[in-house]
Image (cartoon, rainbow over all chains, first blue to last red; front, side, top):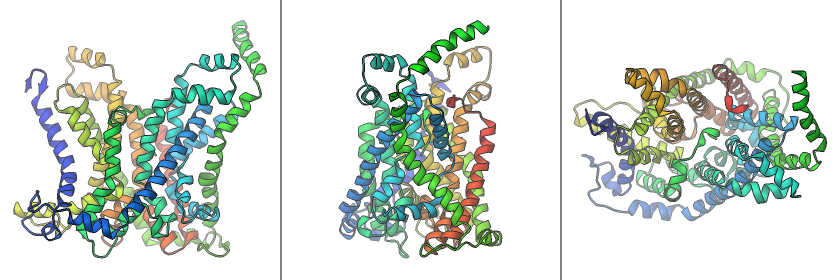
Length: 273
Length: 307
């Protein structure tokens, strides 16, 4: 059934699937505004009968959210900055220089995409500990800096930049390092932004490294703090729902600001971390 | 012919001779940070893990070499087999579900015949912002046996409530649903980018020649999506094999240890029971499985972007 090029059935299907996708989030969000007594009282209703932020207040006073936000923020921002820099340098070297050892290292990076390091976490943990990084935020930051995705994104991008640009700079007597930092890196800004957004999301939502590296509750990231609520024998749902919503706020803000870059990101050149 | 070759290689040879030392040092410096980090946090743990797997290391003291004892113990370990087969079952079920859902949604979102595409795309993308832990929380809240909305709706409809938490298969089904829900966003971006790269002239020409929508999809769109499909399946497989965080929050691998996946098993033996040597042996086995999977999948697709 078509009306002016619009297929009603396909549109209905799209709306239906979108509703199914949106529903868990909506139910979760609306439930967080219900008072604890209403959460389990039948009949369940979609909208809270009495809207309240008491769950949020309890969550906020019981947990040191500022500290978790600060810890997670430090990890996400520092790792992201280092990831962008290291990925840009490595990807640039792969794209613009020819040496047998570059090829060899490229294959090494490629292999890391096939073998997730979560799998060898006992020995990775031993190395983090022996480096003196156990129970420190640096112990989460340093191991997460290199991502094949970031390297591939920059490599792909720099390959599209004409070699003549670099040749011309060389003829003008510009050194290799200045050529990279003053000419190439500024050109690659769009890629840096996309990688920064993705990296921030990976690190903000990271769970496994903080879990094994951090021991001191004062150094917990948000995800570990949330896990301590959901892992309790008797889950306090009112607090858990509110705390979960609070943990999402920074990502939602990031999405609102960078929506265009995220949705149009051509991530085909890279791989998921 | 020979002359041509000589002509083309001569400038290259001259350029090579003219290469300044800076053009060797610079890339060396550029990759140095990545090389050090790769050696420390990938190669190092790999080698160390292999070594630990032959020891009785517990995290403290000196590891003592015990030969293949860990591996022998592993082959008798019921929990190991159970978590390995559960992980493989999850992967085999979750990857196709994930693929079909993400591709279907991407097709609807790129079709010119649908409306509300922009709004729908934002909705499908929102789960990407949500951490695996919170995804677990959201689905646990929906599928709680005694308090969840799903069982409530079933009871209103006159159907019996299902044992989403205490039945292993149903619990796995919820994990698959939650995984597909959370993973669709990223995969959708990959598919949408690939679908937009398919020249519409191909599809229009086929339509003029009388090809049905199904024929156009299976004969044109799907073959052209091959590289993307390969990547989605490879990434999906790896992601499923290392699934951990979401399950932690969703049901903790329960009921009991029925849905305990490999990474959780490694975590439990290595960190909660401090059997690092034994956990490393499990890691090595999982590593070999992943290498085999990667090699098998690579056989199906020679990656062109490596050239």
